[in-house]
Length: 108
Image 1 (cartoon, one colour):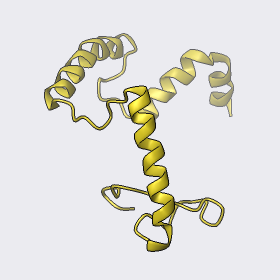
Image 2 (cartoon, helix red, strand yellow):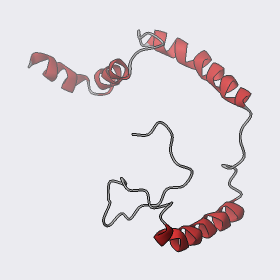
Image 3 (spheres, helix red, strand yellow):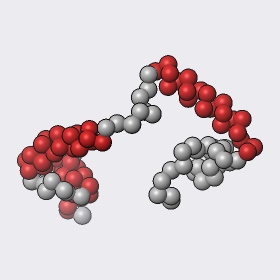
Image 4 (cartoon, rainbow, N blue to C red):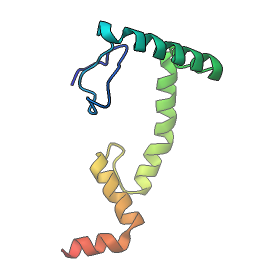
């Protein structure tokens, strides 16, 4: 898998359902690609989508700090480390939401 995605992607989902062969740069598919670009541009304009405008990188830092203010105390309440791996976190919720099922699995 590539470390970055190409700027544009176009796949024939009938013959390539796993999206392996990117057709965006294939000259045979330029007409389709241009049509889809137009549809996307129109949708962006109609909806006021802001996805093409880069965010100030400081926003991500501020958001992360805000999440940490909430997240770390919640993790302590759950008796989990703030950096608990996903498996441990999911195990906590499984036991919390389905205690009877967790007890049955422990017996096995």
